[in-house]
Image (cartoon, rainbow, N blue to C red; front, side, top):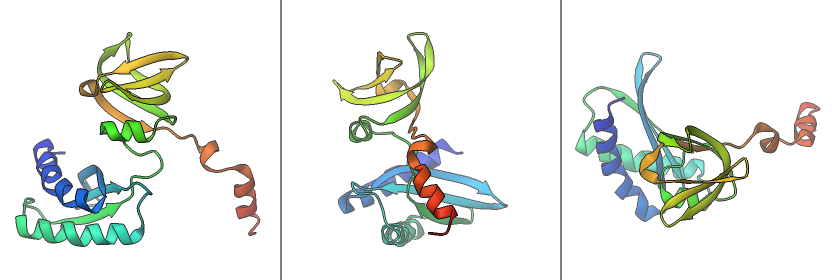
Amino acid sequence: MDRELISSLWAMIEPVLEPEGIDLVEIEFKLEGGRWILRLFIDGPSGVTLADCEAVSRQVGALLDIKDPIVRKYTLEVSSPGINRVLRKLKDFSRFAGSPVRIKTRTKIQGQRNFQGILQGVEDSRIIVIVDGNRIEINPDDLEKARLDLPEKELFRKDLRRRSASGD
């Protein structure tokens, strides 16, 4: 993935979405099945609907047609970030306080780079995570990757699976 292209796209697209109350969560540009896909993941305070994705696709598609930053043929897709979404901005870490997370840092903190725990939020511009009862403070500049880590058992209750399987 071309980091320079992604950064350029981010700088172009995010200011268009923010006034609409839509957060740009992630951008992917990759070859899939022999064709290039530009995939935008968006979110909002109450999640996103299909109508939100369609509106963003139209708006961003028009912007990209005008600016023409991508030299190869591609398909634009707009989607919600899903249940285990990426966390990138400090406001994401505040919004999802209390949720299970997986975090990978660029440098070691307390002897490790990978953390799985409960997100406590943000204090003094540092991300706070509780891992095995220990408080870990992470400088946002040290983040390599962070995402929600909701286990399947919490996403799909047994009673709902059983009812669905029986056709009720």
